[in-house]
Image 1 (spheres, rainbow, N blue to C red):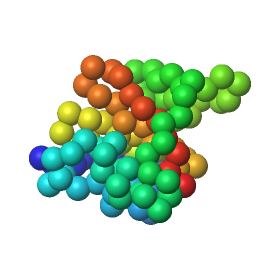
Image 2 (cartoon, rainbow, N blue to C red):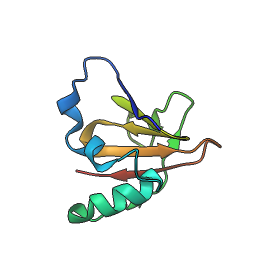
Image 3 (tube, rainbow, N blue to C red):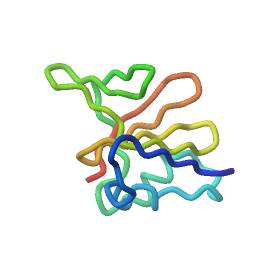
Length: 103
């Protein structure tokens, strides 16, 4: 169980803030549950609606420009994408996903 982190473009590890620290690959729970508990001071994991995601992990919201991921974290069968402004998406193996803001 290894977390693999990929940084895109000119992203530096400190651009991700504490988001990677909320995940523990030794914890068998899915990322959503870990984020919910470990980000409790920020309200936990609260999914946003109306977002779509393409194959590259880019998010689309009606009326907004495309949100490109700045990093990807692989934890078991989940891919966690991190975007600017503290937006995080968790994509499952089947392509389903949830998005929340963790600022």
